[in-house]
Structures are given as C-alpha cells and as structure tokens.
Length: 78
Image (cartoon, rainbow, N blue to C red; front, side):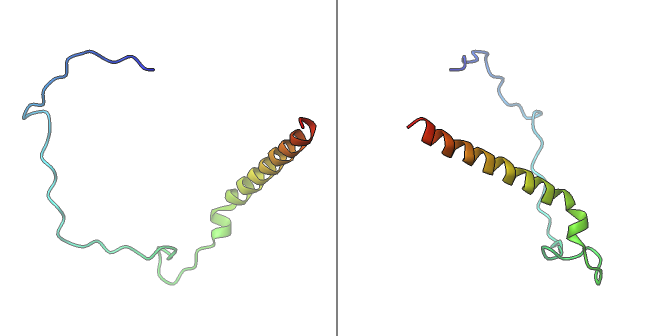
C-alpha cells in the first residue's frame, strides 16, 4: 500500500484559479462521421490506414498462438 503524504495542503486563494470561460453561443458545424473533409472527394481508407490491417494480423497470430499454448497445456497438465 502506498504511503500517505502528510504535507499540509495549501488553501486555494483567489489568485490561484481563473474563472471558467464563458460558454460559446454560436454552434459549430461539424461534418458527419466518415464524411470527406472536401465535398465531392472520396477518401481511400485502405491507403490511409494500411498499418491497421498489419496490426490486426499480428494480433490474430499472437492470439491464436496463445490459445494453442493454453489448449496444449490443459492436456499436458491434466
């Protein structure tokens, strides 16, 4: 268990914080999820996220290897 810190805490003073920013009254329009930032231009996700397929393949290989080891150990340690 972690040791408690017994230092005295400093009280908050009026100069230690700034007031909360005022809320923005105008709405910000955002594009729909999956929409292209440039209207009329299609985004090729295969070229932008080519590394994701590689990472998913590696995770699948590791998961299959671990599952195989666990099944083999369950038969060996019976």
